[in-house]
Length: 78
Image 1 (tube, one colour):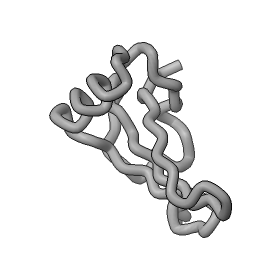
Image 2 (tube, rainbow, N blue to C red):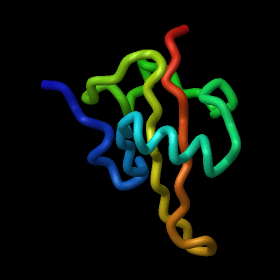
Image 3 (tube, rainbow, N blue to C red):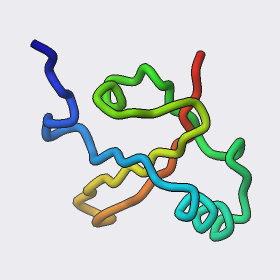
């Protein structure tokens, strides 16, 4: 029986975004994919997701001071 860590309250929402949204994000921040912070494909939060190297993950976190914040990570194999 595998446990999905994404169900834990301490793990923020992780979502694989499509190419159109990736382009919007990169244009908004005037960045390249390689400029994004990285997340390993084997990260526990990604295990139940169908991700490949080069995908971009949107992570939404709740903060008591900043409200909802959004982060983007580039999936890498190490």
